[in-house]
Image (cartoon, rainbow, N blue to C red):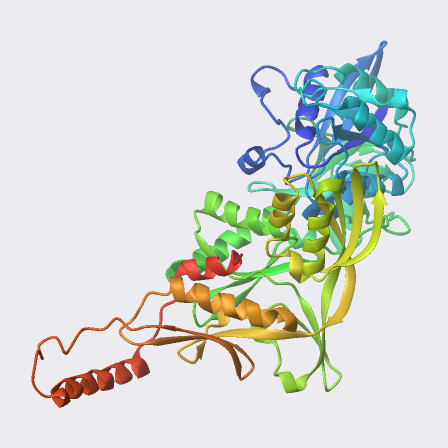
Length: 595
């Protein structure tokens, strides 16, 4: 155990985490020959294209220093704010962390939030300035920011380049010298923390864990404390580039367990594994059920693909336990599913994976969040869908989820960033100057305001400089109304949204104008209305496609023309009663991109 080191890498998106991990794997000869490729630990094509780690990975490296053999366990963490719970569990399984800061960009919001997680778990931090080979590198500035942030000595900061391999040897030496070996007793009752799980179509769900105390042998009867399920350990082992079976793994080790689990709900990240016969006193702290934050309807483009979509979601959920779904139907879109996601990036990834892995094209409705509705009878209802809202006379008040947003920006774009946050109903809580040119802003904001396009806007107004990170804060009362869109007096349920009363009028107005452009003209006039309850707040009319019935009357009495027009008017009226309006797919997508 003295020669084992468990560590993770903390970095903002695109600061060179995966590239640096590649160099560590090459230097320790974990990856050789044909296995060498860019971003070895990113197994999905999507991860390579977007340059972010979506699924966390773990890998064991063997390294010899001065004749001593060391075992280094790298537990890779996802790089996006949506997956912060997984990051926190990976951090809990380590004794040290490499803090990577891009020399061209400096410290960003996510680096700070993940760093606080690591410090909260008493991890030894090794600061590294990466990308020093770049022309735009500001190595001294980045070092100043790190010293200011964590209060380390300047000479403790390692300068490195993941691309060229400079400084990687120093990082390996620092891991061995500075990171403490794991503490724990192999003879005590088994206590292992699950930090990730993957699905294998032949072996079922494979859980990855780090053992804090005790020993796990092949064939042992184990139980998962929080889900209260019991299993037989068919195979245990350690994680090299591929899984490497062992007869037993003990305290301090990072490994995997295969026990033929078929249902992803049975393996939860953050759960504790222990023996059935000699269990540990209590589970490892920090476990929570991950709650989806953003909800949207997914509907197949072709109604016949409904069952295929269900099968695709069932398979996808095996690989991604944080996705939730339940069937729902809509008058406009037919049958589909109401899905819960961790955030907007998660939603985008799920859509992309459905298309790539299962060839499913889906229509997504407007994303929204879950609200708590307090009724006049004193009941509490949680709703994820605007159509589930009770009638206004039964509602006492509605509470919406809020977040604590941390934004780091430079002084040039401070004004526009603050204006954007205040427009989105944000409330400024704190403002700290990290350096003379970098400011950290803390806002309390409604989650519903950021699920649309907040991140994109923030990036564009700050020219890509501002970085953003958020945590759930709780619920607060808000004056929300349900905005319905009516076509010819009929409600289109898929276009309903819950919105703050102050913004309802302008939003309804813009929706009507947009739909007027997108809905094709029919043989009759179509009224496009936005309404709150029974009160119409905006209206546009899509004019009918008309045949000129008076063309053949080129003279004579006016009553002849009037007779023909009246006849046409009657026909249009009858047509309007029986005609229905098809809403094209672009209309649903356009609502998402309203601005």
